[in-house]
Image (cartoon, rainbow, N blue to C red):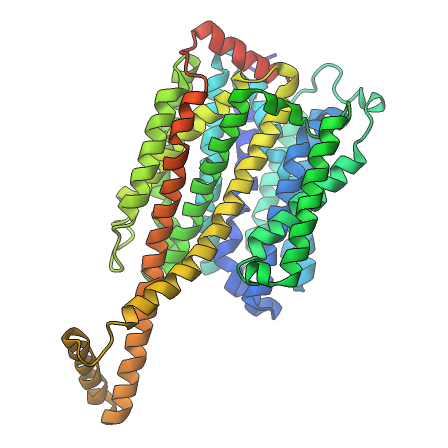
Length: 526
């Protein structure tokens, strides 16, 4: 039964804050890795496991949320997940060693994984059937706000407090969410009472854990270990293949799988997962590349970088409830998806025209363009997952969609790291080819720098060496900047490649009745 009045408002606030908190924690630590490394006496490469462990836990647990919610009861599972997230956040902040922190980040990811799919299910139940597409719009706002606000909040906390407070900030939110869940989120009839009738798919869970965990390790660590030149990457890749192939075979051959892969028989769902994957690539890669580029090349502080992301995000997310209303009115998702993909293609090439002297407000139009593209694409994708499945299959569909979005993000970040490293080396080689004595522009710049240095040091030979070093740093900086811009273009090519697949999705305009029935099926499945 749909919630009313204040109860409805509180349910919306609880579910959205929990989902935003989970997604926010995927990016909030990125701006604090240097501080963590210094405090814990670790290298940046080792500290990266703080990010990796959370991502691995997320990707493993997300596809199992539908099964776990049915087994334990949705409210019980949701409440337990909030408590796990809050308790592990406290121990993350209290950690005194790197691997202690990595362990608690993994536990935090296990708790956080349920907060996406389960929050969305609870949110749907708070709305009348005809209004549930609007609920999807509200939830879509959380999906884009979380990863975007992470660097802003993280930058503020690091600048004015300590890196430990990045984790402590979750605790009051978890306490509030726990109280609101107990008071206002109702159990559905028969919830959690069938667990004695359900056989737990232990082998499925094990194979999924090994397969996805190993795949995530390869995506995160492949670049730093030179991919398949590394024996460890080869072995882990083999584990990933065995785990994932075994998982697929297992889930398709037993009556009560932990993840229902049979839903891929629906063409619309299968094709929509491709869009979901690429949308994850676009969302997470742009959220990753821009902060790194802005701080490393344009000289922004962590706080300035975060602030530059807030204003365009706030403007962009205003589209979500508007699109949600149009979906509720029966609009076909096809035009919105076409516009969203075209905007994202434009965004990648538009961003490719950026320069190293741009201020944070100069990036504003580009960042608005990004948010608009994601908003126009994300909302229809959520409704596609609802409309394409039967009520019984919907929980598995939402869980798989969320996992695929996260996998797309992990793939995109790994691709960005690998591509930037290789392209920066190529651009540096090309730029260095112009640094020859017979190039008048190079000679002029070298002489200018040498004279400037000599006026300060009084030593012409030392000034010449310093000028060469400064030019070398300038070339390296420019090479990386060009590589970052190339990465935006590559992501745009992903969107261009999937554009023709739009015509394999549902293109018929739905009536209000059909939209209401699709949304009702989504809610009743939880």
